[in-house]
Length: 470
Ligand code: MTE
Ligand code: MO
Image (cartoon, rainbow, N blue to C red; front, top):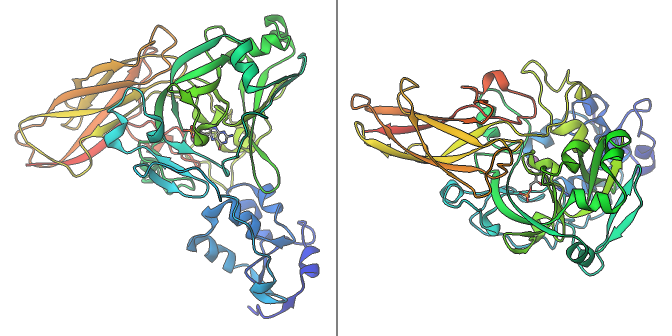
């Protein structure tokens, strides 16, 4: 294929629709990516944003593009050279300059945007995860928010619009605190990717953490804006949240939750301004974030700018196209995103944090094993079972629950530990397995194969750790 033809920027700019073909430039080269559009992990729509122009500003925002696999894909679609070569592309300012400092102990999965998990040694050591060790899941650059000019807008269907300062939130509403666990839908994606590769961040078991969140009830704020339970029943079906973080096309992070959860007097949805007694750290949503307890992390919108009551769910990519699960038969080429509901309440989960894979353990001994367990919807963990003999026998773990765990408002995780007998005749590889059961007697599936899904979300297969008995 001849790729020596030289095109001007103006010529490239004429190719920004499917009809005229979709052209982009990168480092002095011209590509026709029309045939790739529908395979783009973020959806064709996102790729279209770059149509007719340079990829550089987009790749600066989503730096996961800067890897050989992605450059190889692009290479296949080269059709020519850009007049002026690489020098013709304008330098792009790094949207990630000025990101907050992070604790070096976090295991960094991507630097820009920043995504990092808590190491296993720390996870199950603390019922309440210290702020600096709490996992971070950012889709975009951290916005710099001046608390003194911060203003939260409450608006939408049947509401009187309110603008609330941080001071208003702190002084005009009653303060509430809850202990709640946040878990990313992608937690334990690594295990699921063993079944079949998945496009998505690598997460081991550390995309989960528990904090004491302080703030005001969303319910109280909605009532102050004129929403009564009657209105909630008729006009409004969803409460949407919008963050201050935005991409190069000024699209903000957003999500929504069903109205029932938002106004439930026992639902405990908070607009939080404190995390473990301190103002929210920059990475966790300073100055105000939503905390939707019992629900997957993606709905707890950080750097909260707007709360909107609506008949509709959030139209955001992350509500409509990302955090959903499908049959293992569905893949990127045949997914119908609208056919599955957005993830809300999380499923029952557990993980072993100690011992670690490859550890040497004593055959014929009682092996100390520990970890965490958690379920969504406020369902307490009632039991954790651990086996070291392929499931022939199970040892029931001792549970340590976060305070406030009561009936159906168990928003915080359960830590557990067990002394698990390793058979005397089982020298060599031994697989430890753990599974939790919640108060609805939901338990975990034994393997990830049957729950494999293209986004690699909600993996809650028995957690297995291979150790070495001697
Ligand atoms: N809110 C905004 N504004 N932007 C984001 O990228 N990420 C979401 C959620 N809220 C996100 C957000 C996801 S996917 C998760 S898992 C949690 O925040 C993670 O919260 P944390 O970073 O405080 O651990
Ligand atoms: Mo997430």
